[in-house]
Each structure stands twice: as C-alpha cells, then as structure tokens.
Image 1 (cartoon, rainbow, N blue to C red):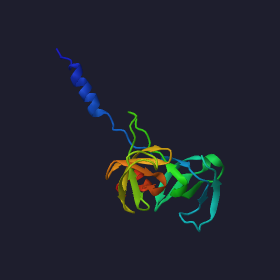
Image 2 (cartoon, rainbow, N blue to C red):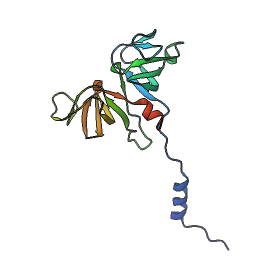
Image 3 (cartoon, rainbow, N blue to C red):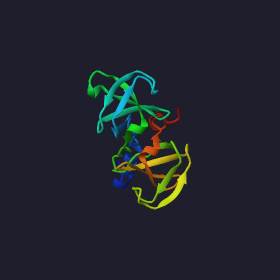
Length: 169
C-alpha cells in the first residue's frame, strides 16, 4: 500500500516547481511635458510626432537618456525616441503589490531629500553619473533605496531601461 505525502510536503514540492515572476517586457511612461518623438535617439533626427502632456506609452528600450516608445496606439507611427526630460517612468508592480526596482543614472548633481518636495530636508548630494535604484514615484519625484534611501526630483534622473529590460547586455 502506498502512503500519500503529507500536505506540507506536497506544498513544498509545488512551491519548488513554481516559476519565478519575470519582470515586464516593457515599461510604462507618461509624457510630463509636450515631447517630440524622433526617428533616432538624437535631437537632430527627423520628427515622428509630437505627444501632449499626459500621454501614456510603452517604453521598449533606452539609450543614453533616450527612450524608445511604441507609438502605434496614436496612429500609424510605429516607434519613436523621446528624451528622458519629457517622460516619467513608473516602477512596474509585481504580483504581490511591491514594485520592480528600476536602475537609473543621475544626469546632474542631485539633492537627496528625506521626503518628496523641495521643502523636505536635504540628506545628501549625489554626483552626476551616480547609479541609483528607483523604487517609487510620486508627483514628479522618485524614491530611491540605493546607494542611500531618499527622494530625488524625477527630472534629475534617467531610468536605465536597457539594464532593466535586457539584464546582462
């Protein structure tokens, strides 16, 4: 006669077989100021279209502070590159409600504050090029947890989309 496995062992077996949650294939962005999508990641390249403030789009790649957006939802435009100054990216949510942290790079020397808002106390100043990790967004501010915890203005940071969407490349 065969003895059934105790329920606790069966649950462990199921947990071991579960596939880990994968990060999203793209990131979502909101146009924070009227932005021009371009054919290539350069301010000199041909214009694809102009997007008004509040436009939401999927970001598929990034390069040196430029984001490649899928523009098909707004007509037959295909894809276009937008400069990070005109977009705000949200850290995407996981199934448990926490967020996927986003690797980011400071585009200038930036004040880290203890809360979001210019009135909040200054904790430190991080230098241009410092790599940070964004874990939350609120009204034009990003909360970081690395290399220290605090808040940065979103326009002082660009998300390293390539590092998030294509780790190891």
